[in-house]
Image (cartoon, rainbow, N blue to C red; front, side, top):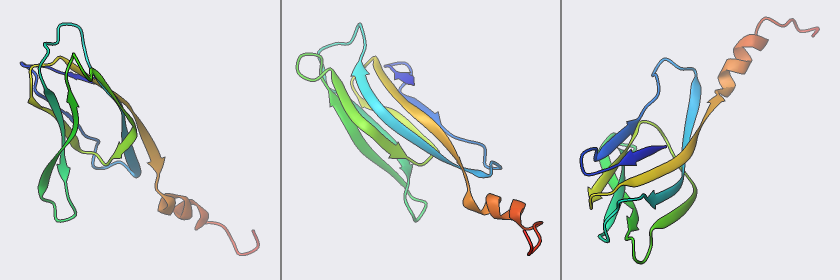
Length: 118
């Protein structure tokens, strides 16, 4: 998880490029924390599209008096991704999970040494 505030407006999640795995980042919950004002807090996800252009998409608009928490049901993202507090002063807490999945082609490399008899 991470926390976005007026002084820390963004957090970037990235993985090492040399890794031979696919990475899945899933966002589960976005919620206001103690000390939040009754103002709109807009959280954006910033990533890259298929043409490598930066895109920003709002994923949550939280307000203490009407919607202090939002469940995103494991909204899956491809790292690297940046979470940004586009409006409001927070604090906003983001929680989720990161999973590493071995690429299928790495399994075939191990099998290349097998003889036809096996």
